[in-house]
Picture 1 (tube, each protein chain N blue to C red):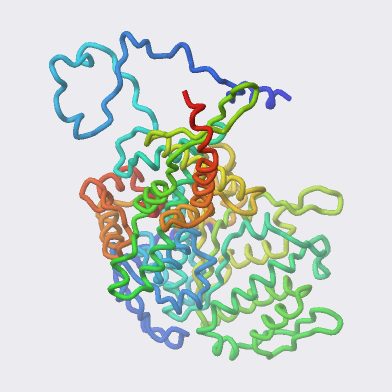
Picture 2: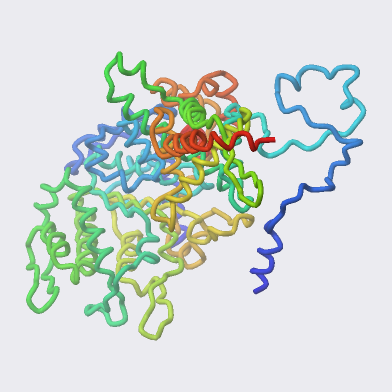
Length: 382
Length: 222
């Protein structure tokens, strides 16, 4: 099975490499319209209305969302990883199992930004978007817990579940009408009084979860289940974007009644997201970020932890997500820094005189060591 | 317990003396050249550095393009417990906040208003500190068992230091318990001071007033 999967991914990559026009019958996306305006090394603007619609303010890294607020526009650089994701998304098909991509790279090289660009790309192609800001929220930032009534031993997380549903609702307004025309497969009996009958629109599940937080965790599972089924039937294409996805196999801070920490496999939401990542469904793309904040100690300033997928996902997680396409994010090249420098000068963002000189341009490049995060930080106060 | 001891040993406790010995023997070590343009030129024939050792470059003297005397001094003044890195981050973030505020105002302004808005945070910070320079200082002088607060004239570098110290104390007083942050208050204070407003300017005027009131003690000088 595994080698078979590898062969498939090899082929998928080759397919993605050359231009591929598909004449598929009825997708949510009528045409892959956004592909024409994506060009590597160019600056692309995301309209503020779209950024608001996709709630990018909370999903982007904080310096960039601050920048969005200050400059009044969201302009990002299209880089190689984004091109690779776009070409992979182009080959996604009803006959192929969900394509799994793992973004990995050193700190500050643009994993999250690329993920957000991919979400925007999915939006322009009218895909359904399941976007998780950080999987670490599900394991380490659990405010309240409830024991599941559906599976004994499972732990529900009402506040995060409601947040997931609300975020799903906000980000999918562009396909909301189509989602309303897709129907549930079976009866869902949430509690003694609440139920969703067979043949109801799946948006009802979402509304149910938002209004009744104690049912939200189960609603998330049902929603994902229905999404997978409808994707398999070719009624929609879905992008699952999970930031810090390796945290789904990491540590948790949720305590059980006997005061031991619950493993992540006991958390309902984690289980549901894992099922979404499993490629037993078709017509979708799963984009994950392997981030070292799961394993790195924030107070340890000397130790350098690895940032490769195997080290971050751990053996269990790696077994689960295999086979996948690793996509590495790297530091800027000189031409990329020049593009950004020119943009900052054009926008009058580089305010000090010394930064606008040739010497300043060179120093910015080398002081940041071509790292996108530090480059932005240096430009922020100059 | 051991960590507590280690902390105690790490930080300088009360020290009122200057260091008597140095890792650099003054007979064989000379100051390094910090300016890049200077560095490209050959040394003079009679320069001692031709045949003596040169001290290592200090971490805050690296020839980066944003090197600025006032900002560096402000970083040193705001340093607490020897954590200069933290202080640098604070001051640079304050500059960033100033720039963001000014940029937003600039983006909203009309064409002719835009010319009047300064975007460079370094210029604003320098102007703010300059506006806070006091003209006199008060120093205790004991005569006949009574201590009088006597006004003294001060030199430019000391005025600069006192301006920074006043500002730092005000910001520290307000940024307590993690509710408000030093960088935010410092940014507000610098911006206000650059327009001759704010608590630091008030403190300066208060000082001037006390100096004026204590004018009669001036003869206790010397």
